[in-house]
Length: 355
Image 1 (cartoon, helix red, strand yellow):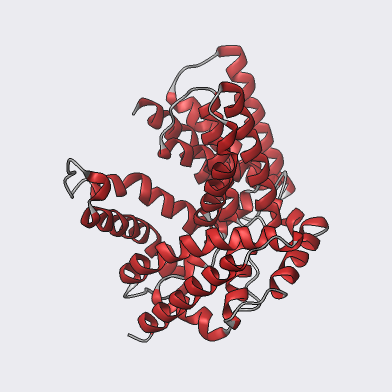
Image 2 (cartoon, rainbow, N blue to C red):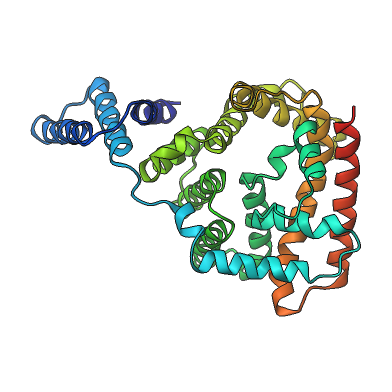
């Protein structure tokens, strides 16, 4: 708990300052004053070496103002929208278009859930996702990168579990996950998920245990250092609030259902865990979703309970399709599986949206 409190002391003043800097109208004078205040605090630290909590709060607040007023150091989304990533994304989308899916919507769903290209989705299907409360499935996020991470872990499993093999696997996963994030457009939620993976793998390499809340606070601070303007975007806000709900509310909700001796095959408890996960995310994201979009899905719990397992399976299959199709090694059973999961998802979404 002490480490979480320390992270809160460092992260919250920084985030508050970034938000304040975005609300104010930054000018050269304001940036100069923020830089001067930051330099003064650092100089005071070296001369006096203070240990008070107030000093660190003021220091991080000055850092946040400085980052917010001086803009971003690096924007992955700008890199992803131009040059080689955009070209490769278009080539992969073309390969998907050339596949023989039985359903016309399957190819569009594959491109949407793996490459972030929603141009092929019909307006009716997009509206069904929104109305049913499953719009987050279309927005590339931690779900999609998490599935990509699991696929990579499965592919690299034959390397073994020796210390050297673990290092090779961790570095390979971080590099390929970063490449995928840039390829898929580097949205705020994808970058957040990438930071989670990098922090988790780094902690594993250093043999350190790290809680979800600490990873959340560290990722939030790092992402705002490099791209402070993201704090004003709905995708950034919803992504971090959803994870905050999982870190804060989910453990309590999940604990309301007592564990059994053979918990692995306790289906009712598995359903309760999925419901708890959905409720935790929805409670934290609802205020922002209402302010940004003015709507609140009535059947989000039912939609997530039915759609999330299908979306997970469909995304895993789609990842293999997207990266095997260009080299001509995509087997037919993957296409059939994608058609099956896609059609089933669309049917469920249509029914829930019409309720």
